[in-house]
Structures are given as C-alpha cells and as structure tokens.
Image (cartoon, rainbow, N blue to C red; front, top):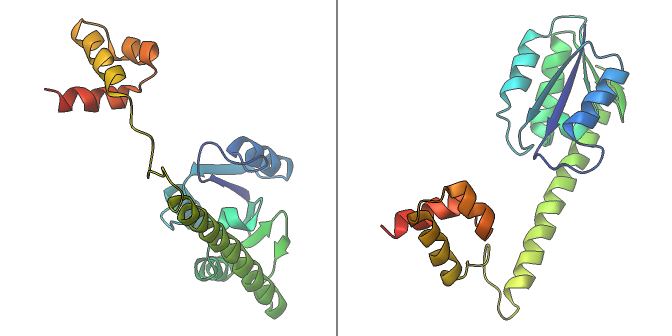
Length: 187
C-alpha cells in the first residue's frame, strides 16, 4: 500500500506547501491513502503522523512531498527513517527520490536532514536579528499596538445596550475575544 503524508505548520502556508497542494501532488503520485494534519515542524508530537507510522506494514511505501514535511531535525529524521527501514517500509520523498537502506542512502538522508535543520535555524536566527534591530528604533513596542481606549469604551457601551458580540465586533473592528477580555476587565 502507498501512503501519503501531508503537513502544514499553519493554515496560511506558502505556495506549494498548502495541505490541498500537497494532497493533490500525493494523489497524482499514486498514494492510495493520504494522512494530512496541521502541526508545527518544531514539535515531534504529530498524532496523525504517529498513527500512520504505527499502521505501516512491510512492503508499504510512505510518500511525502518534501523532506521538511517529514522531519525538521536531523536526529528525529534519521530515527524515523531507520525505524521505517527496519519495518521494511520504503520512504519516498518526491523532491529527492526513493530513500534506500544503503550506506550511500543513509549518508544522503543525514545530509538532507542537516540542510533542512540548518535552513530552519537560519530562519529563526534572521527573525530574531530583525526583531533585535527593530527594538533599537524609537517607538518600538513589543506585540500588537494597543487599541484606542475610546474605541474600546464605545464597543463596551454597545454591548451594554444589548448588541451581540458579533454585531459589536463587526461594527467596531474589534475581535470578539478582545471584547470579551475588555468586558471582563471592566466589570
């Protein structure tokens, strides 16, 4: 049996990485069953992925579109691939090829996973550098800008007048969650 696995970190993935696009690609590559989930690649706690790994039998093939959909760090990736090889499950990464249980195959896997982890770490590093630069500029504040107090008070008045949270949110542009918190604080 050929299984496909699709994963996104967030609902708004970049072009080529959305669940829909991954699923289409996996279907076009012969996957008979596709498991999809939204979970960040920084965590190894991916329930649907682990269920899929458990159900794989000797002779099955696990297909993913890209290596970073499968594992984000070298250690986890190597352990996963070796465990699958022990179960006699083939691993096919579409943008790389069929991974084989050979010395060269293991070298290739280790190298690719190391590059994927490096890429992820560089993204984090660039983000932190950008944030550090932004903090040095006048007027920088961490997080979202505060809402205007008069606007929040107006929204609370609308709620007290009997309007629903949805109505007030639509009229003021303030999210329902923010309205609930503001109302709780002003009791």
